[in-house]
Image (cartoon, rainbow, N blue to C red; front, side, top):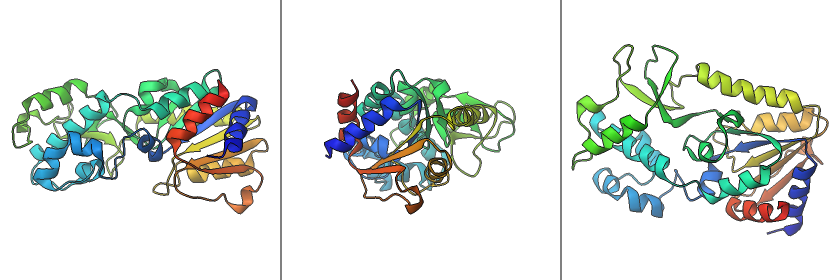
Length: 281
């Protein structure tokens, strides 16, 4: 690991008036919660689903085409309960320590409940939803529902075939239609809750766009570039005193138009944030 780059980022954080973090799935992967690949966590906690359906990772299990909804909700309930009960990954805790005492905000595409375990809700915009909530699948109205009790009820009623009883499938209290996890799909509800969080993000940007703003992009891939990557490039280019740091395990390069306003670091986020925390404290 390039220690000079770590020291450089630590100094950029110290000097910044505010830090805007863009957190992608690579941050959860660094914490051990890789949703897209077969790993020890999946092998340990979801082996029965692998044996029954041939599912090889959490993402595949979530979007698998099950024969009936009782099977689908069997996986949903196990997956959501696992993410809710899992401890916050060390990289998230290290990031919190790195930002302590600074003005900061976090824009994330992650839905896996890791960020709300560590950071206050009013400093987060979860652009693609949050597994802690359900919504009507139509949706017939503008409300999301905290789902902990429903998830526990489904888990306790799951049979040996990994199915839950049909009567346990969550139903919308308004129209009676099936509910779905509040995460990005073709029915995703960008209602009042979502709009409030997004407005907080926009307000933060507006407050600091003419000040010394550090953009810290962590583990952001190319699946949804319009959420974090491209807006961060635009801000770094258009705001006179804004600098972008992008950290990813995969090799990457900064756009030519950001020459002198961007630092690209090819590093495992687990070790990067651990070392950065050591430099700042």
